[in-house]
Length: 380
Ligand SMILES: NC(=O)c1ccc[n+]([C@@H]2O[C@H](COP(=O)([O-])OP(=O)(O)OC[C@H]3O[C@@H](n4cnc5c(N)ncnc54)[C@H](OP(=O)(O)O)[C@@H]3O)[C@@H](O)[C@H]2O)c1
Image (spheres, helix red, strand yellow):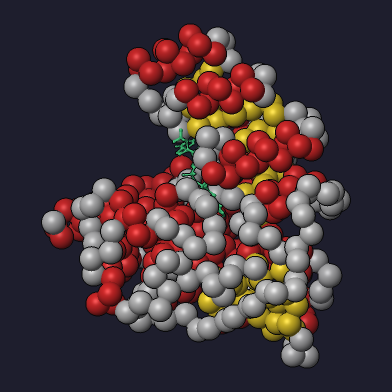
């Protein structure tokens, strides 16, 4: 490996990936973020990084950052894509949202290893991402903790002996609540995740169970398993990261700390393992509990199953509508229950759009955002 490129370097996954690189002594050869910020400047100094790419920002903000960083700063979405396509690097994609799609494709087309946290890439355009890996020879290792667990569990199992994959969900801060309890919940309440500290969108998605829905589609793409063979179980402690159910009735479980640095490290060092510097996970005194998800209250989950089964553009539409609805909820323009409502109505109109190429997926993504935004506006 000739170094690591961290996309979404200023976010929750990005910063943890940088911690892992620092601890393992891996050279960071590229950093990318969404906005020109003091944080990206500080990271470029801290890691003496030879390249920085920033996708957004005003002309003035870009000039200020370019002057502070020197010739190493590149701007625009294409600069982030180009950074993912550097030769011979390992790319960690911690970008949030569909903006991560083109960089994922570029990394795999260039033959790079891609540690993929950006589940939206696989949801919006799973078959195209897999095609890019086949074409370019890139290697896709999931970073999402559930999928990292499944990757590990499945490595020692004959696929013909797998009955189903069981993905665990914490249930989020509103576990046990019913629809009337959720009418007036605030963004601050939704952001109070009981077990994981993460970025804004994924935290709200965990509260609606949309995140679990995205993960179901992600698992279908990554492991080629039918939706009928993917189960979701609520596990409030988040200590079992996934199960594999075998045909003889055995259940394999991946158990451990709730610390994303472990799956990030696995993606960087696979197939080798190295000490992650954490205390051993103590088993004594732990209580593990499991229950069925409440799909009437948290209807984003069955909507995701339906979008996944429909295939084509439907998963991309689900993702785009959710991104818009979550942003509106966080800004106080949409109620919590409205998030699933906007997804459902956007899917009803646009699930049949074309999605056979990246351009088609991006156009469908754009149209779904437009429709979701108008639905949000109509609610207010
Ligand atoms: N956090 C977790 O524990 C966790 C666990 C599993 C999976 N994931 C997945 O990992 C991804 C990142 O989540 P997160 O929680 O780390 O999000 P986050 O904390 O919100 O960070 C998002 C990162 O993406 C960057 N970004 C946003 N738009 C961009 C664009 N157009 N081009 C380049 N960079 C862009 C942001 O840059 P700025 O700071 O400049 O805006 C930031 O660095 C999501 O797909 C999430 O589902 C996260």
